[in-house]
Image 1 (cartoon, rainbow, N blue to C red):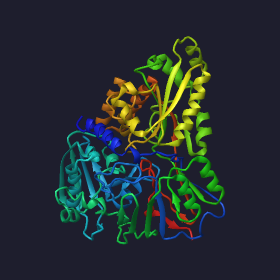
Image 2 (cartoon, rainbow, N blue to C red):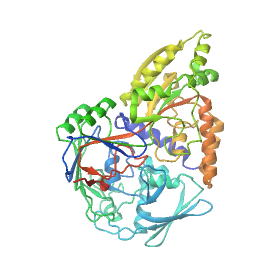
Image 3 (tube, one colour):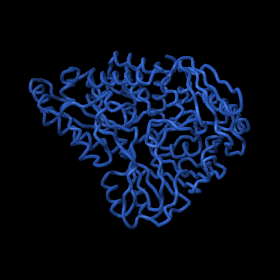
Image 4 (cartoon, helix red, strand yellow):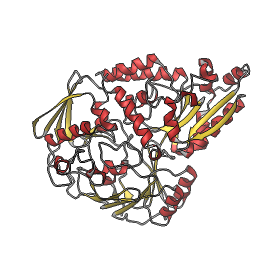
Length: 531
């Protein structure tokens, strides 16, 4: 289907370019928002200026180029799409569209636009502005452009109606529009005024043209970003009037700054003991479910795990409950599904082998070669702790396990360098959106750009394709459920934990809103004062 190889190649390209910025350092997770904390930790009333820190610089805030994790807090505060995810859900709600319909053949999407929406330059949003925004994404042709690769045409029959016609059904199309990397609406007047020869890309490296609750008032790469409230925002004037973001790669320094009052919030990166320590000091801890999963990639192309029976035994030898308890505590739940949280009903794509290490131990006893190379992604320090737990379990089964951390750049290079691939790889990673295709096709399809150890399950590939082209919700769930079952049975992917987003903050704020696929941030425009 058109656009699929484009998706895989673009994910690969941006991964290589943004390797240093994609760290998934100890993000949190959970069910509903969970707030706790005692005395201290902040003031009774929240300040109207919010001080944050990023662990890495983001590339650019241009929504048609941005494709990272660090930086979601900027892009999703400044720009908006037609739809968005409801809090902690894979269901949709209107953003710049108030309603929409989908034709029975799944190829025509008609959106009724929200009236009286202003861009930050003061111009008014209408269907022509939306059309030009979508067209700009295709013209810029950067990594997120894959989401519009199957568009045949646009129609604007009146100022408040925008119609998209696809070449063929694409079941995750609304998810694309709701994704943090999905098409955003950009002021045509700003683009025209600063178009140059690059569709205003140069201008939008340090300015914005959005409709969101915040506008960029200063953007100095590598140093500081400042967002100011847009008081004509259609959703109402934000309580937080300014967001001041510094760049601080050292999470320990961020923690000290939080305790000293120089930061108001840490959005990600704190180790579990530090979260517990800050909570004891009176800071609030908020946990949210997220599309973030820790898993083991198993190499079927070399070493002892070429044997499918041994891969099956390996699945049963991993004590997920013990690992999650000792490494994550309350900041993750045991993964029982191939897919991230909320992408499919819990009974589909199940990954629930019965823990029985004796099966692997019995098989290992008959092996002449008992060596295993286990690598982990060093960008998330929690991966090392998971690797240590897995090493101990495998060594108790009689295997000789060598553990090594590798940088994210080497992880992303593995599909093109199979000779360098280990027997096992541990990583924590995320999809683009809360749709199963944006996970399983990227990481587990035979041609998936981030199928690190190049496992191939052709029957699962076929089921994914059927789900992608389906227009029946039950059929979509069934197809991806089948694909997930086949992937789990292959033994090439062993899920460990569904990791939560964890935000630690000074007291004084209420109304925390989080969206499953939009990691490393919350919706700042929704924050209110507790005072």
